[in-house]
Amino acid sequence: MQLNSSYLYPNKVVLYSNLDQWKTERYHQVYQRPYYLYRGVDNKLDLHVKNSDQKDRNVTGYDIVFSITAVESGELVARKDCTAYDITTGRFFVEFNEQEVFDMEPGFYNFSVYAIRNGVKQPLYGDSKHGAAGQIEVVDKVFGEVKESRLIDTFLETGAGTNVYLSEVFDAKPQFNQNQALHTFAFYLTDYTGDITIQGTLENTTDPANWIDIETTSYASQGITYKNVTGVWSQMRISHTLANGTVDKILYRY
Image (cartoon, rainbow, N blue to C red; front, side, top):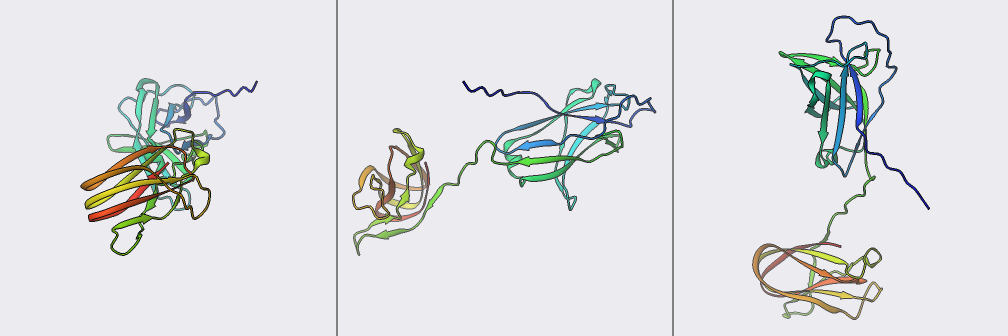
């Protein structure tokens, strides 16, 4: 039997303030561990503000701000206000949703945190040597990467005056699909009137000769519409019989 343990615990960093009068230092934080932001999920980072004596710091009246900057240039990448768990014990968190992390390039950044009250900003430190900059890494490809939809925008007429057009042949990825595999098509139409047929083949060649009509739909519309079909096919293509308008493009996702 294979056993893989997973853990759900706060991604927490302890910060030290100089907001108090001088305290006897009985504990020295040598370094600050890095933070990690993972693309593909929402990320919640915990912060705990303490004084130099390792005691909880009441930060009532302060706003805590979290910043991410580029390592080389110092360019500000993101800045967010922290939300308090318990302001009397200095416990805060900051959240970055999936889209916010996706907009950041994978790699290493610096992070910093400061407290602000009455317009005065004061740094919060990550170690006992007053280091105010920590390291944060944006990590990619841990939870899988969503592929872009396949663009289909080239249609060739089967013969002069037939008004029947065929798209390019595209791979239906049978190796990734089960018997009820779902295929989704988004049709971008302009003043279109006609019939659109989704075709498939089981031939595993670059130029299949035998095609099956999976589903035919008549359209008299403008804008975006979609169609879902199921089944495992080696290759697929689109055939449409044009009466009026244009098929601007089709986006396909398996």
